[in-house]
Length: 337
Image (cartoon, rainbow, N blue to C red; front, side):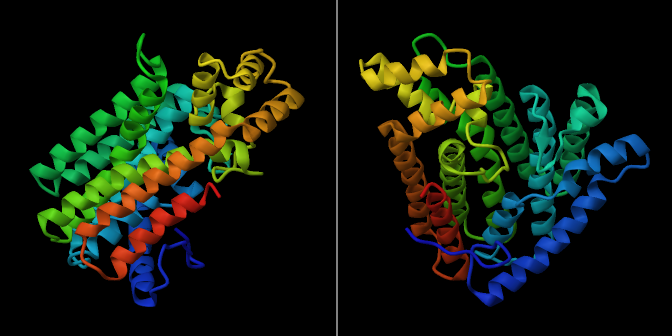
């Protein structure tokens, strides 16, 4: 599937839809800055840190797109878009502490500015702000937000402890991505369609779309850690390898090694050598893994999930919003080449 994006980064060439999305995204951005403001100087500075660092705003964009499957002018739609981005930002503060990440969006990670405790508490503060805002959207929205928050926590927990004895590491990885990333993307699409007043069948389609496109996006990141000169996140190639982050190509390589693939056995020995802190050794590991068929298999898996996401749009009425959602799924697939 080939796709193009406009100069604004929105997945549509429809000028009317692009203009409407850009206008509403500007409102969301303003509301985000208001939502993280605090009279306490420390809380204010720490809360604004990631908002001001920018970002793609994928989740609010999907909320606004979902609303165009109904009535996008409803005021609840902007509130919902702010809720999902606040929730995402809050999770990033926690993730960066757990991963000891040095930077986020080109800026020093919050824990390197204020320390772990302040970073964690800032994440908690943003979760509280999101919860306060979602309360105004009604009991069902509160329930969905709570369920999403639970899945975010479970995804992080399961990633931290790894697969159970006897559990397939690849299946475990996909489950982690589903909970840690796709759950909130699915909620973003759901809230947009729901608060735009779309029919229940369309709301369900947006949930399924978000679940699958979210997994596809993260699987694409797994591949891009190896194949891009500089990843979409600004990371150097092989950053995940060096940090020991499980990615699909590595997990597939370990599976192939266990099945007797001689090249995979040599590759896994290199990965487990304890020498990936050396730039030359890391570069060698990246090149070997790039050339092994497991990276092609991981690329194909990312494309499959993106195609699954697009297929769910069969239950969505045709129009500019549906075509934009299809384009976004195609863009995710195109990221892996």
